[in-house]
Amino acid sequence: MTKCALNMFTKCMATELGTKSIRCGQTYSKQTVTPMSKLNCFGKLMQIAQQDILLDIMANQLMLLNVRYI
Image (cartoon, rainbow, N blue to C red; front, side, top):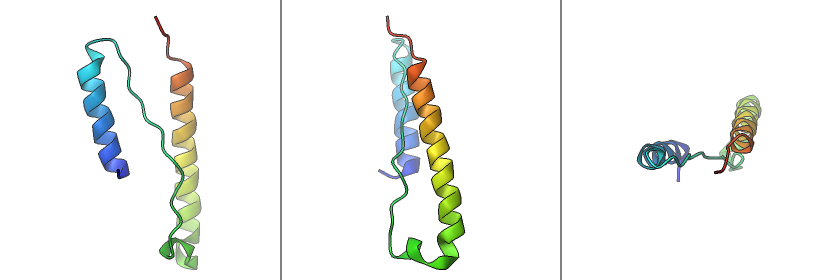
């Protein structure tokens, strides 16, 4: 799934299951390395994207740690 599709899937699941007090979250894997991503012109952008993905992963993990189970 693409990141956008995964976002929408998670939102739909959260909307549907939220009425039953079930929380939904998502985590992302790292950036996929392709021949285009190895080009020097994309090096800086890839570093920024990887840092952003890492922050997303840490935020999601923190959210999962704060979930209270009944």
